[in-house]
Image (cartoon, rainbow, N blue to C red; front, side, top):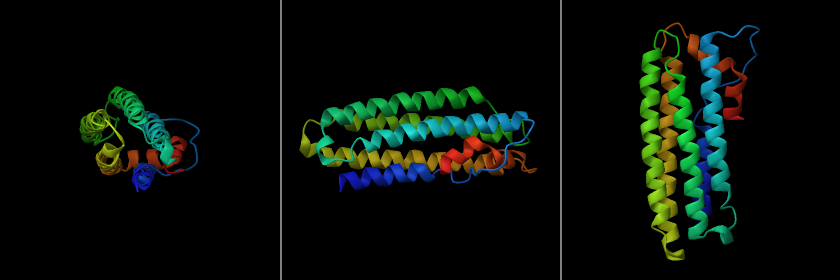
Length: 180
């Protein structure tokens, strides 16, 4: 059951950015296309890292408090990198760029808060009996991060009326990796 919860959380992370599709690469790259590529690269790297963390628990024998603490530390590290990368992007140079930046700031706050909850849950495990509750808390946090990311992607796609950012997200090869 615990393994299924983690697998479900990993699968939901794989689907969070379903709005980022793939398309043909342009011959010239606009600032908006560069922003979209950087955004999707950061998200892909983070998602892959969290998926790798949850895959550590594919075997019941790997469900230990030490492994859970290590996984929480890995999740924290990858989340810190994501937040730094996203904050470094700033607002895309589009009509609704500030709305996207605000959404990214909200995403950053959410993932930082949820990773703190993951750490707390992992630290609260003193034996095997504590693992199911910790895994449940961690899964809830992963789901919350997934929802926040999905909301940010939706905001990015719909923020500018001209659809420039949506097109950049759809056409960026880096965004294809998010759903791949």
